[in-house]
Image (cartoon, rainbow, N blue to C red):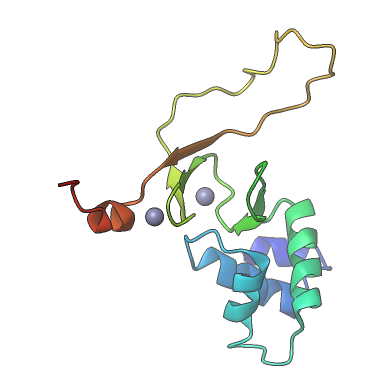
Length: 137
Ligand SMILES: [Zn+2]
Ligand SMILES: [Zn+2]
């Protein structure tokens, strides 16, 4: 954390608090949820400021932006390599650290597109939703 402060003067106090809040949770919050977290420390911050700072942190590589085809944009304070799994019932996003290494899988695909990457997201049912599902009678 401190090393970034020296390297990047643009890491303002606001931005630092947003980053710290994001790194303190593992829930992959949406921008709205991040706003709810940082307002406890900075009651006067606006949602627009939070959005802008999240985009800047993402472009600096300090946070990871999770996008998929259908869902809402979410943010991850953990930039270490890992994959995500989304609950089909409640939308909660969890981390998967032990998936096989598939980096480079896009190379050698046959498409008239110029392939620049891929989005991988596992889907499933989270423990909370599993517990709520009663066996069919
Ligand atoms: Zn769930
Ligand atoms: Zn994650």
